[in-house]
Length: 514
Image (cartoon, rainbow, N blue to C red; front, side):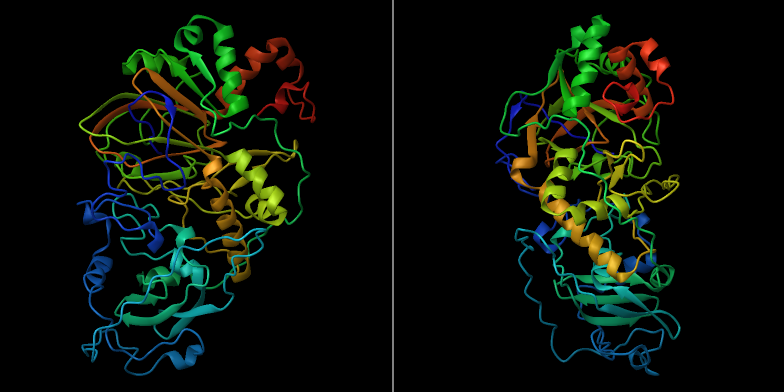
């Protein structure tokens, strides 16, 4: 779950690009954070280190030191049998010291995509790693780098992915592999020193192929209106109109359905009125974050939403079998600081661009399921009932109706071959490039009294870094409840009842509008 918004009047933002400079007075990232060009998204050095396993914490304490001088496990040409000797199989770390400090490799520039996009040139050669005793397994190189288990790549509090997958060079290569007890250390060609518990590697050993439907849907997309980010005219309604009549409510829901988002002006600056506004649609969905939110960035829940960090464009609830459909935010106050600009990206529009530029990449994201999770709090470890693709195509209507895009909550996937890994990463990198293009991004700032609601199945949202203390309120609405309310107000109850069970592809069919 993520929290957007800021103070200031609603209006266009001067921020451009995937990682805006935010407010000029602010540093781009919080103190202690790392540059995205190094393959990491910004994170705060928080004090709740108990989430990190003691094994990983001990291993990280040695990362500033050169690797221990063990036999060189070359990942390029060595066979599994050649990787081990009597000395290297010892569980004790080597006490030998290198003759000179290890040279710090030059970090490559962020990978640039050249169009027309065909391939990011991921390498097909696997890397052989020890997984237990004398047993070895092969792992995809990029997958291995993307799933580093150190606290810089997996947030120590939220357990969310901190590494910026798409800043990692596609041809990243392990330069040295060192085994120290139950920890494997890998020096990568992009300069990162990675950690992998042996038991974790063992859990993800061996390649399995997932079943992928390679058939391509037709060229139809659901009817929608994409907002021009250069326009300062946004879909907007008045609080009084929504609360006073069903016609005002119908107009609000219709704008959400067509545009993917809508602002509500004139909302009383208190949580009670905001909650009443949401309940005008349906009951508020209760999750492990609670029902109606009224919160500050204090990490009450172990999620990056409860920090002051920059949040890239994503959808919420990818870890639920049924993600919430609508999400509303209302900024109640922002004191002693600045920043926190709100980001929206139309996922349907981005998917349409992807399909035009490379239909195969579009289909891969529609056909390849991915695992997601929410595991930050001690009493929570949520995963969907099944893995889900980034794009969900309706089986009867044959159009894209849901997007799940959240690299923070994406888990390590086991059941795919090396070829499937590289093809998916290639397609995902292409889509990420599209959603981070300046012309795809809508940057705004809000003030108390103006609420923002958006379709979480369509719109990606994010936030720039901020300082000070912000108080935010809002909540979720389920998809079925939103769609039921919208259809009844638009078509009338009689027409709805006459079409129950009708899944024909017709604009005259109320069920066609999901």
